[in-house]
Image 1 (cartoon, rainbow, N blue to C red):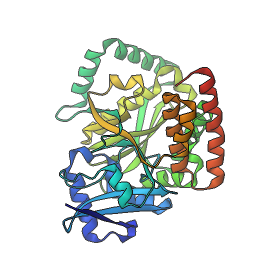
Image 2: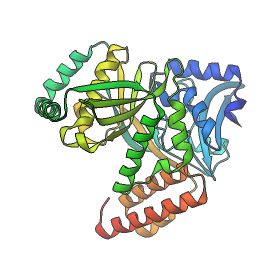
Image 3: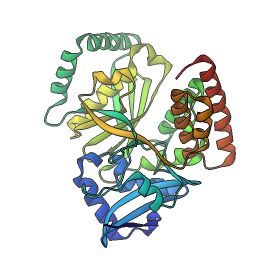
Length: 366
């Protein structure tokens, strides 16, 4: 059956549209992430330019919604590069190809790093979760520490060292003071400068989005967890949460706790506190970092996708002929293009990216 669509602003969604979106999202376990909530799209639309929702029709019936943002001719998930899960919200039977989405939205290409759903041309990736459904924190901790005895023994030793050095460990969850979030953002920006990654918080709207999400809306919102040793702050993490899902999002560590694995204990303490409040899924995002395997007991398949007309990065790739460098360059450009809304920011990001790419080509790094 023929599929058609109309592209709306978020304000153009009717009450029926919003109710339908919420009902479909709530009924679909694959879209339980807070990033699929309509409240997330609302928050992005309030601070970022060119945010739209593709309303998809089939045989005269609405069958899906796809929130996205436009940067020139490229379509990105709404809130990219801060959005960790994306896809079409609609009945499970709704199958809309990515190439068709590009056509329906009148774009040139689509770029997404963690697509949930039909993506046959995508690079398969995985995210990981600590699933505590039906078990207590103590039961989960017992399972993980039994499976990875040496790791948990080492971390217990680190905690004792931290407490002996600075004082008893304590955690504050649900911190929503703007100045605390500003401190976390400053730490992340310093980390990006130190590691040569693109500073996604150089763009004003990305900072505004995090602050906007601090305002709790019923069972949706963001908050900061802070770990202390005595009176000394040693680690922070911003998380996004909705329903029973807690998504670890932006961690930042202070030098005082670096040698004591403070970030590990912030994660464990957050799970302990939030499991007691009814949260059952703690999402760590991409499998990536080695430490995550010690916490996660479940994975979810996603895909990194780029469809549509080739970008300038693809043309450069034909000259470079190094697939690993090309994938890295695509990811770097996507972060720059999605976050920066002005030419100056894009130019600055490209300059740093070019230096990084040239260095990788010379050294043969991925």
